[in-house]
Amino acid sequence: MDIEALISQTEALSWQDLQLKTTPEAAKSSSEKILVGRLVADRPLNKFAIHSCIKASWKFVQNFLIEDMDVNKFIFTFRTPQDKLRVLNQRPWNFKGHLMILKQWSPGATIEEVSLNEAIFNVQLDGLPLDHFNLENAVDIGKVIGKLIKVEVDPIYGLAFRKFIRIKVAIDVTIPLKKGFPLKRFGNKEVWIAFKYEKLVDFCYACGRLGHSQIFCGFPTSTLQKIRFGPALRAEYYSPQNLPSMQNTEDEAGNMESEDILPSQNNAPSAELAIGI
Ligand SMILES: [Zn+2]
Image: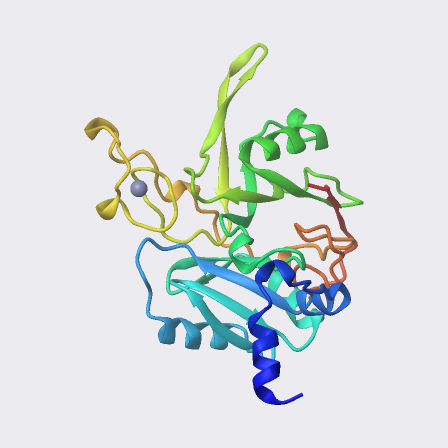
């Protein structure tokens, strides 16, 4: 068949004649090595500065690719699934003062369909009376903050081995951060339970959202309540060396992680309860 005949045959095809094939195995293999990311910022950031910042922070992973997808959005391709998990396990990541949301690219979805509005945070529930330190309360409070992923539980010392309960939650960054709640107690005065977010970047003290400061806030707030949020939402530095190593962890997609979520620099026996979402 000459080339002209081939072209005329090709032109005769319409999109309705197309029968595109899926390659689920190849897609699964790719998905295991790819992350999609979005920097939470209300303005375009300098991608070259961001690239170098990411490369410097992820030096423990070798030879990954960064592809610019859209304004403040990126595709990261790693050499192995383990490399991807090492990055995922250390969330949240912040670059140039902005939170980076990272998500996996599911095989059946287009890249635009990957939701990049949920960030993973470790949150400390601070101020609970001792008789409120129990798993049921931790789960219920976690569900108020966002989608609860895990509650950190030490198999020997339980929940009350420090002054707060530590949970891992997926949080919708399009809505204000939750500050805490007043706990009513029988026969005792009300007490404030504060939510403290670890590795929390700068955020808007007027509306409580990530991505801008109060100077650039476009959300309506009354003059009287211009400053409703503050640095109290930020958890104090929490040294990983003091943390128990964690086992049997799951990421938010429900995939088993191959490594501890934090560096296991001590041998303290511990575990955490993973909750499916
Ligand atoms: Zn704001």
